[in-house]
Image 1 (cartoon, one colour):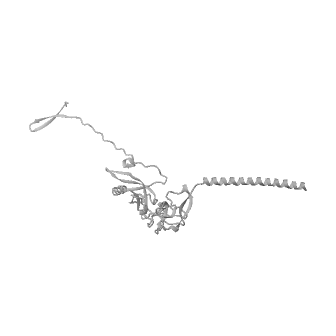
Image 2 (cartoon, helix red, strand yellow):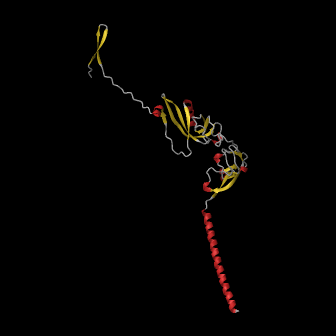
Image 3 (cartoon, one colour):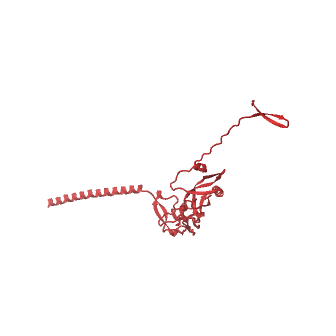
Length: 289
């Protein structure tokens, strides 16, 4: 009996030792996983709040706070003009990045088509109480200037609000027909009477375009329209090259070279005048210097 008891005791101690070793291994594994998870959380990108639309909105559609929501987004991927809060108290740091202030009753309007769950940007919506239109898209010290165009002078029907164009003037200088680049990268804010960049009739031939310009450019473009013809050239989205001054006349276009008139020096002639009765006769004589 004592031998059996001793054998059971030894077996029990052995099993206990094995159990302790297994527990230590399991604990070590849990600690390793815990440390790995903590390291991943520490190295994970930070998240920030961003305001999105709960549903799709058309151009010019008004919206209020209940039409918006806040989600988390990778902080370094949040656009600079994105709203961070739907409502904030006036005078707080959060108010600078909020769509509405506490107590605000006026709605805002979308200046372009917005899809559901799309991030709301401050430069794509109007201020509270404003309607979407030209005035809502004009920055400080900028003006809206309308240019009369046709299918041949406005890139057919391919222009949309938001496009950039170069402006060429064609007229007469010193009796010679000339075409000259007078302005570059003008931003269009309206085509005819539409400021909607997602307008469905995009292929319709425009009769006028409205550009965002400075007061000085208003004067220059007004003079250009009154003294010649204006043609627009669409600038590509990926264009980064600065266009230098361009001017071409008819002779340069056709490769005509004007011949300079050669000056022919006349030989000096000396004469002597003599009177014969009532007549005066000039007689050539050698010139003496």
